[in-house]
Image (cartoon, rainbow, N blue to C red; front, side, top):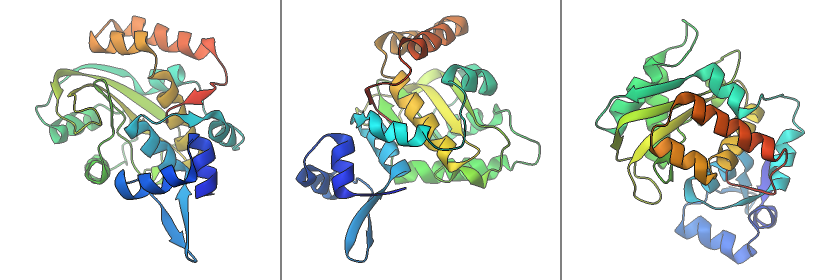
Length: 231
């Protein structure tokens, strides 16, 4: 879904001039078509998550009208698993260790996935701040997976991730999506849920898996349509 700059300004609740300023000063992705600038909806969500910019619920509602049904985040994480004590001293080492733990079909090329994730990080860190990152591939259908999932990973040691706030990352939520609409909706769910202070505290202290999943479910139950969401 392509958005005009006026639509982007509406979703971000800022003036058109601010959107243009962010395009030049904060690398908000934009594409020129017939001398006019447009933004891609998925890229907008990604950029907002990475930069801590709230996004209006209306863009989330657009994704919710898509035909691809997406399970709740707690279900997606149950599918992808919670992986504790993931080792690695660098971003590249951690991504490799995370990919090794993903519940992927046998025919998926994990080395290819690693290279795609590293390429995505080269475009801009997926660290969203407060020690959390959301690695994901730019084009989800490249993997041809049957079902989307999210793998939650707690690192053995915090790792520098070039995050927006400069803090090292101790928790990653790696998104693997079956389709583009599902990709957008999962990022939206993550961006909203990970704003919860109690969940962030549980992640920072490497709380028991049951406590983390219970908190995610509680955040989901607290509202079915968030009024504002990051990502």
